[in-house]
Image (tube, rainbow over all chains, first blue to last red; front, side):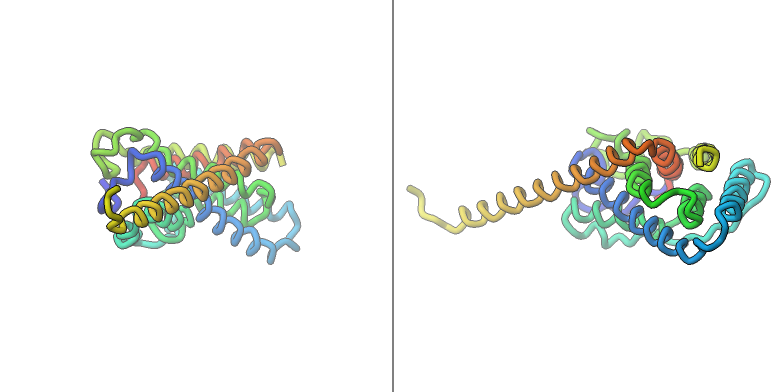
Length: 187
Length: 64
């Protein structure tokens, strides 16, 4: 079970820390999504039908990975966010931790779901106006286990009574694939 | 009246710091809520589901 390195005040069980973490994740995600959207502008000359074809291919690959049919080598950083982030004041430590976690560039990504989201943004299947709401959803989702542990601050850590299941990553990937397909279908 | 040993000044600074943090926190929550409300008003419910399910799956699986 992975536990983030926590010194001093626990990361869980406190509303200000939760808010700081969620805001950090949202902002970190928004930065990466915006960069992907701007980078995707370089291929905006590609006809929309072709870009949607690539998006469908990304969804199918993610679905095959979730179904266990293929095993993708996903681009990700093989390492955890350094312990020093928590040497600061609790709220700024949680904010910084959230910012780095939310960027998606600083830690493990064991499921292809974030790559699907990035692909849809990169291919301009998701419009720029939806990026803030994507970032908010990303922040809320990342804070989910922390919300479940509100009021349990004395215990600290991410473990304890919460059973963290590898199956959740697969369910999340399927939900992401279905949502992505809905976006493509609605256009 | 007790002699001023400097703690009053420190308390005042701490209060000001807490006030500033509350203002920043409030502004952050406000902006964050405004972004969500704006997106949802534009019908961006599916994008919200997309990123929420993606991040939720990762988080509950324990990926940090």
